[in-house]
Image 1 (cartoon, rainbow, N blue to C red):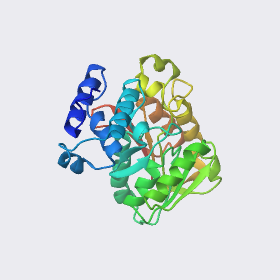
Image 2: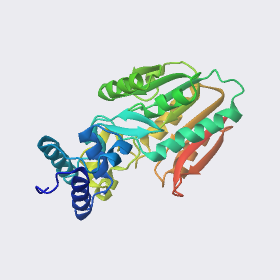
Image 3: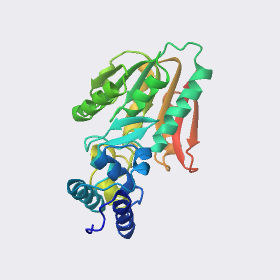
Length: 286
């Protein structure tokens, strides 16, 4: 960043070009500059001709350099938006993805036809940042929401996100459904770790070197946690009931078979995301 980049638009132009030259997403420049200036997008547009202080220039350059070196933008600014709401993210949690928004959206649509009553018990298994659990509670306030995670550090982030978004969530620490005991639930969602270990060689360094591996990888070719969930869920599901998983694009048939094995009378379907990839598996229990 040279001495001529003293105004907002000059700094933004430099960063965008620098990121592009280093094969990083250009829009990261705007997000990082908004973070440095502590302003929203509209305000940034209005301040294009305003000067940056030396401290702001230095901080912006450091953040851009860190992103070029591989640190995800979301960890640098400490936040990601999910379902229209802000969520704190740290290296203790996976960064929420747009594909997971589709899991929430599809679940809400299915609820209206499957359940005559709106007074329902919902659990998010492996909640991470709390994005699924909090979004479901905000979109459907009458839900009684529980969220579990094996990582206490992740739960701390999720608790803060619940406070920020004013969502009443019960958080429990433990492995998959074990913290739930014999409690019964109407809806269970989960976006568990599902990447096979041998897929690591094909992953982007931004993800591989910074996001928690415990939230990314699973044994049995990425299928272990789906198998375990399907074994555990029958004794805690109400009828009618709804189960929804986010999956890797090659895992649809295997996860579908797990669900059919343990819920032989359930209606199981594999659904595609907006990019045409298999991304969700649902099981409706009548």
